[in-house]
Image 1 (tube, rainbow, N blue to C red):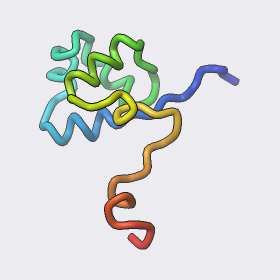
Image 2: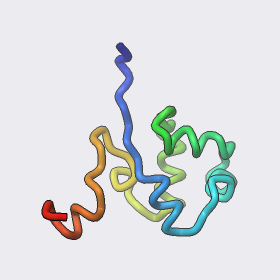
Image 3: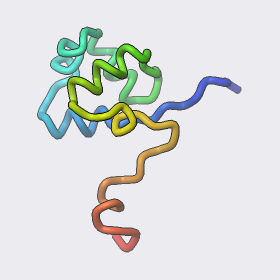
Image 4: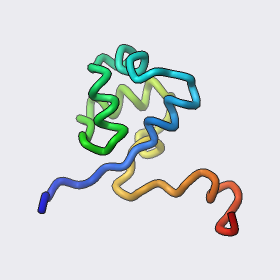
Length: 83
């Protein structure tokens, strides 16, 4: 059992909203495109520096991108539990 905290993120959603390929985002924040893939898949937790770079790139607070708990689906936030 790992003691490492599982970090959830919305990178794939944010990237899709902006029409960005993994490679585009990777170049913008200075990492390899595979790093973005590993982050999106939950196989890699970002360094604090990378989390700040992603926060600045997306112009969002870090906690809007990363969380120690799974994010609630946007559809549930918008439409409630009934859908």
